Image 1 (cartoon, rainbow, N blue to C red):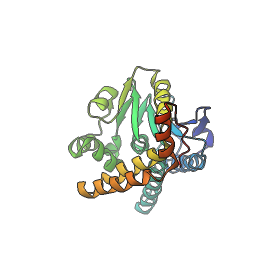
Image 2 (cartoon, rainbow, N blue to C red; image 1 turned 90 degrees about the vertical axis):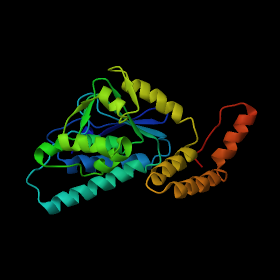
Image 3 (cartoon, rainbow, N blue to C red; image 1 turned 135 degrees about the horizontal axis):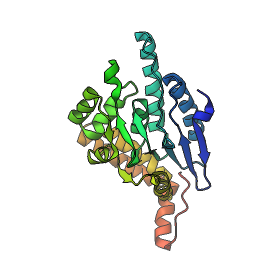
Image 4 (cartoon, one colour; image 1 turned 180 degrees about the horizontal axis):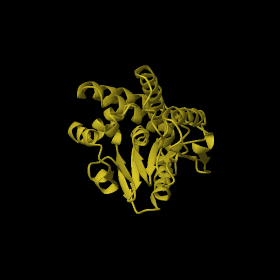
Length: 255
């Protein structure tokens, strides 16, 4: 997949905008490899504090699926997809999916691997693969179930129905709903605000939420305790406390 179909724009406030428009001529493997390269680039850039993934209103991560692939090839593709989603999920930088148009199939899997999703009223969501005898392959079924519950996930997977942004907001698939044409601008403002906070605490907090969600409550709370204690060994915590006492804005370093 040509790099120009998976492009990054880095802004002066430390926000990177990764645009992944629809391209029905691209294969899932090509799109995933392009996304993997861009995530690796972003992860290595200290000056990038937060990431927005968006679709420019023309369909998010849309591609074609090779119906003739073998079971072995399908498993290989799934392995790649799951590795890329985990890499995105564990990037250590706050990451928001901003959806303006259609977000289905692989696109929804990518969005679910972000910290959360926001959308304009023109957006739509779903896993229509059931019509071709397919299910999600990048971990989408598991992330969706953890987000909206098992029964609602099964309804969407079994029916293949596409839901509009209003319904997606009602079932808590998306966090915020914006008027058409305003989602990217308003989410950039939100992420800029988030990025004034401690990168160190954001990174640890995200890890605690992600890891703790899959273990029992007592173990998860112990994980939070240890992570809380770890915060006190960081520059960011000392700087944040001193800034509070000095009544000034903190100058965090992510350390």
